[in-house]
Length: 462
Image (cartoon, rainbow, N blue to C red; front, side):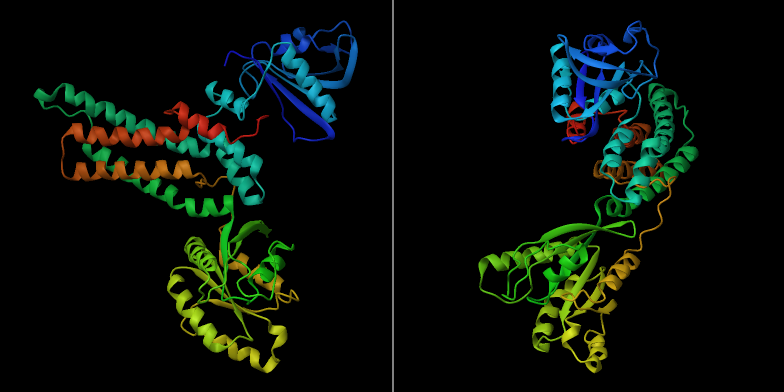
């Protein structure tokens, strides 16, 4: 934290412009050594915060580039430290030359996420807001963007902090009672505590339940494409993603491992998984692929069951016996493929192949991409994700979800203990555990191991 750090903050490679970020107590002093203001009478050190000035980067009389320098004074900067951002031309040579000069004059190259870690340590944001920065950078859909913006504003953190402060207050009162154990006094109103614990349990439960939506918005709705061999699963995947993502062949058993790709449809990300065809086979490798198909099926939110309209009914029945037990609780779409090879009069009869399965149904030709657009629209409808508003508090982070589950277990024990009139020492222990896990989300309680894991996933310039 005592070092002055620097890094290229824009994407790697040549571009129109690039931004190099410098942060730390010596940021201004280091940049003064390589930056010459266009007005020779002005000096970087004398400028106020929120200043932008034009000048040159030079070294040993050699002019490197004409640049704009933005100056932010502590504590009014992203990191809370003196920060300078140098906007230069996007030549990779220029970028690395400026970086080299900064390091020569006292900077250290930043580690992944170090700028945001300093912002967290300096109190510019809490830990959940810092994680939202990475989510915002990675957002590829309107839903992801709205959820990241909501979390960055601190809506989630404020809700948790308010609850945690009330818990801490009650915990202190109960522990005060323990100091006067012989006098049988009660400082914490048990009815109020029970009401608060019930409220907290309901809120934590609601937040934890929102993770299924948040995870789908953030990582994409998982859609498994299943069926027997040679029904056109890989062809359908390629049609849905608009690219030759999977190998297509008439040879049965070509797909032996799952192939994934993500596509944005109407603002929703779908993670399509092409799986190995289901059949009875003695091939050990293919059987491993079929086993993986069923694992992917268990994890999918939506199942596209692809059926070849030209297949032998006995083969369809054989595959169905293996597939149907895994569809319980799944949103299933029956997709009848190769409609182009079937007379019009025979198409409607195929709708009643599986009358006991509650599912949507569609006839397509994956090879000719006939009605694939209708399938995409049906997927958006079946996903049934709610409209995301910027004020919605929805959990998208696995670390937060796990902490909420632990917090809910603890607060339910508090409720149980109050109903059974347990002594204050038992209740206090569970209150502290609930507070601990809520504080772990916002970073009020954390460890170097957790911080290292979180910020290592950031890009270097952030």
